[in-house]
Image 1 (cartoon, helix red, strand yellow):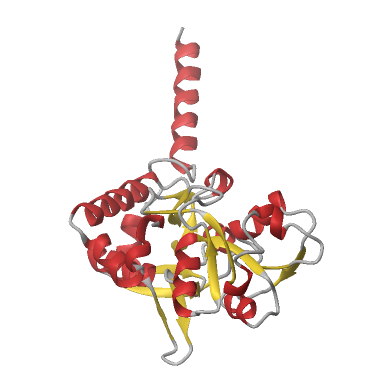
Image 2 (image 1 turned 180 degrees about the vertical axis):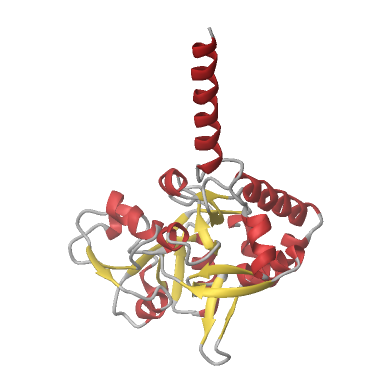
Length: 269
C-alpha cells in the first residue's frame, strides 16, 4: 500500500511539473502582463491597404483607420505603440515568429488563418467586388466577363484577393503586382484591366479616380468581415481585445473612425 501511494504521489508531481512548464499552461504570461512590462505594443501593418493602413511617403508615417485604432488600443493599455512593417504573404509569420504582438491592417477573418493564429471579433463587414475602368462598365459585368484569356487581372500576392482569384479565375492573365497600392492606378492607366478587392477599398479608389468604376458594390461575390490578428492561444489577451472592440463599438468610437476614414462606404454600403 505504501509503495502504491508513493508511486501515485510521484505521478502527480510529474503531471503538475509538466503542466506548469508547458508553454500553453496557465503559468505562461499573457500579453496583458508582458506588454506592460515592455512598455509598448508592436503592431504589424502592411501600409498598402487604404483606408485601413497606408504608408505616407511624404510624412514617412502610417495612417488609416487601423493606425488610429492601434494608437487608441495602446492608450487603453497605458503603453506606447510601435508599428512594424509586414506584408500579406508574411502576415501570420510575423505573429508566429514573435516579430509583433498584433497585426492591424484590414485583415479578413478566415478559417485558414484561425487555425494558426488568433483572430479578434469582427469590426467591419466587407465583400469582394470588381474594380474596372469606367469606360468598360458595359463590357465587364460579371466574373465570367473578366475570366477570359485576353483580360489582364492585377493581383497583390499573399492575401484573400489572391486566394479568391485562385479559386474563381481560370482563364484570365493574372498579373502579380507586389504593391497593392499600385493596382488601381495601373487599371486607370490601362496596364491591367481589373482587380478583385474588398468593396470598401474599391469604393475609396473609385471616388479618388474618376477613370475607375465598381461593378455592383452592393452585391459582392463574398460576404466577409475583418478583425485583428494575434497569438492564437493567449485567451486572456483575446478576451481583453474583444471586450475593447465591443466597448469601442458601443460608445461610438468605431463609428467615428469609420466616418473619418471610410465615410458612406462603412459596413460595405
